[in-house]
Length: 598
Image (tube, rainbow, N blue to C red; front, side, top):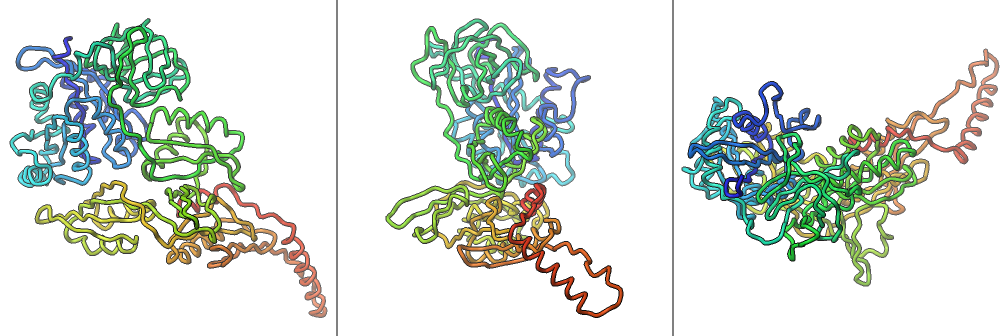
C-alpha cells in the first residue's frame, strides 16, 4: 500500500477515560481481530493491566480500513497509558505518529492528565482530533466538555467527535476523521533507509525484538542493518507487523509500524529512540529521538534468597529493555546482602516493576524505602548527589541539603478545597495560584517537595475528593531545606535498609512510628532488644522487642522467697551475658511489612 494511504495515530487521555475500550471497537469495526477471539481490553495483554484496569505499555496494531471515498487505508494505531507515571510511554508513541485522538470523558470533563498529554502532542506538532467519549452515560455533560475544550485546550468545539467506546457510537466518524484530518507519513522522501526504535522486548528464542516506525526506505529479511548511535551491525532475520499479534511479512516500507528480529542477542545493545539504517548505504543524520528521561524515585531491590541474585540481574536487564524509563545499578547492604539501586518515574511505576519481577521472572524480592536524589553542598563548595541515605556524608561536613520539588497541577471539586489545602500544608507545600475551570471545579498550581508526595499523596487526594481529584506534575527546582538523616538501630547496630532522609520537624514522629512498627513485627527474642531512631548521636525515639521468659520459679513449691529471688537473679545475669554476645534475628518479611506501611 502506498505511503500516502497510511495513517499513524495514537490515542491519548487521562487514566480510565476509555482508550482501550475504544481501540477494541476500532479493531472490531476494521475486522482486524475476529469476533470469536476478541476479548475485553484486547490490547492490554499483561495480567497486571487487566487486574488494575490500567494500560502500562503502549501497544501498536495495524488495521486496514476502506473509507467512504472507496480507497483502502492502512491505519497504524498505538494505545497509550494514561497515568502520570507512564508519560514517557506516551511521548515515545507520539514521536512515531502524525496524529492523536484526544479522549475526554463526557461525565468527568478535561482532567489534569488530559491537559498534560494534549500539550505533549502539540509539542510534537501532531494533528489532535478531540473525541468526547462515554456520551451514553446518564451523567454525561456535553456542554461542559465542549466549553472546557475551548477554554483549557484552545481546540474549537466543532472539531470534537461524539462517541462511546462501549456501545460503538461514532466509530465510523472517528475512522473517517483519521483518514481526512491526519496527514500521511512525513520524511518519506529521505534518500536512505531510516526507522525509529520506539520499544523493544526480549524473546528467549529469538533474542531482541525491536519495535520500529519506518520513516523512509525499506527493510527486509537478509538485509544488514546498523544502529546509528553505536554503529553496531546485525543481520535482519524477520520483519512483520502487529495485527495485534506479530505477523511476518516480506518487507517494511515508508510509514509502516512493525517489528524487526535480528541477530542481536544482548538486551543492552538496543536503545529506545535509536535510528535503524542499512549498513550498505547508511543515513547521515539520525531521526530526532527522545530526551533522556530522569528517574524521580529510587529504592533498593534485593532478592529474598541470595542465590537468586543472578536471576534478578537478568530480570532487571530485560525489563530495562522493555521500559527505557527504568534504570538500575548494583549495590550492597549489610542487612540485605547484594542487590540493586533502581530508579523509577513514580510510585505506581515502582510498584508495577516489582510486581512484574515477581510474576514474569519468578524472583521474590525485598524493596527498601523509596527516596529521591538530594543535592548536598559541603563546606568548601563541593556538590554531591545522593539517592541513598547510606551514602550521606558526615553531618559536620554539610553546609546545606537541597531537595527536589515538583510543580503540581491539581484539579479538584470546589467543596474539597479546604481538605486539599490542609494536605498540601502538611506536606510542606504551598499554592502559587488557582484557576476556576467551571462552576464545580478548580485547578490548584502548587509547589511541593517530591519526597513528601511519594507514598500516600495521590491516595489521599483521591479519598478526600471521592475519586474526582486528579493531578499532573513536572519536576521543579532544588530548594535548600532542614533535612536530616535518620538511622534505625536494633540492639545498637544501625540497619541501613531502614535509614531515611526526613525533615527535622517530622523526624520524631516518623522515628516513633517506625520503632513501634518494628517492635510489633520482630518476634520475641531471648533478651530485651532496644529499637532506636537516631539523628547523628541523638536518640529521638525508642521501643523494645518483647523478651521470651522461661518461668524459672515454676519448680519452687513454697519455701522462703529468697529461693525464688535467687533463681530470678541468676536468670537476669544470664540475659545480660546473652545481650552482650547475642544476635537479633530479623525475619525478611519484617522489612517488607515495615516498608509497605511506611
